[in-house]
Length: 396
Image (spheres, rainbow, N blue to C red):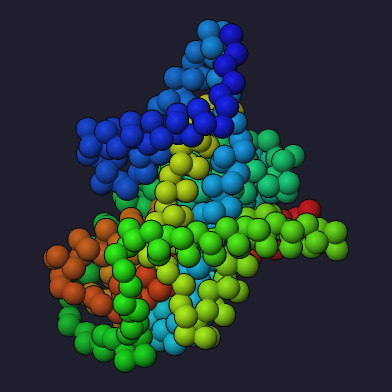
């Protein structure tokens, strides 16, 4: 028996999946501590149940892909609104070093992924899905790239990307904390740093409450304008022989728009755009996880485990030489190292959770928090998307 859900029911099922995930995370505290998104925790369970009923021939459920594709574009538009190039340029040496480390990490993760894929007799392009697409990018990025034209001919891209992103969250939580604690205890002498430069302090624009409809109307206007401009811009680029994914075109429009707004001293409302992006991502992830093919994921399990082990080794080396040493060792260096490992393997909440635990034990580390937050929010996603697109073109 086949059951095809229309667009409304697809959204209803996705929202119900998120609610189930919230309850699972509350019930099993290790899911919450590991910063596993509710969309992922419930999506894995429900997709496994759907796979079983499909395997036994009882029911084959399919979702409408249109809402998922639209939500993806909204999410990447909201990401683009965070790329304030002016703030990034004036953020100081710490943020610059983290940005450099991010670029090195992107190349390292993809070299490892492509190498492991080739070693297992798979195309190098598949290795990108156990590289920075999944580990640095996370679930949203993995699902986004698996649905592009560049990845349509790559078998297992979606399953490997989601599996790598999930394992990355777990590894980020397991590895980052112990490594940072080891570095802190290894270098106990007090090293003084300046904390905030005057130019680092962001002056907040006074606004209405975040749930004011006036704020949401203007934010939705700009987000949808980015989608409306980005899609035809991408089609024009394709006609000129330059193929980029739709979500990347939308994000680049948002980056341009937010920096123009900064130049005329009319900054975009990032608080609301972040909320819109977060809601879009959560629903998008739930829809994507419900489509997970467990049989195909099991087929790539040896490749996934091998790549994950090597990714841990790679990020430890980069973190020590480019992050820990550049922050002057001590508490700031170890906190920055733990945070970098956390978000480089898993997600930014993992990195911030590690830093929070360290500050409770060893004291404040404002430079580490500021530098990691700025680099992750203003630079990481844009750099990853641009470099991944370049790698796909180079391989293809």
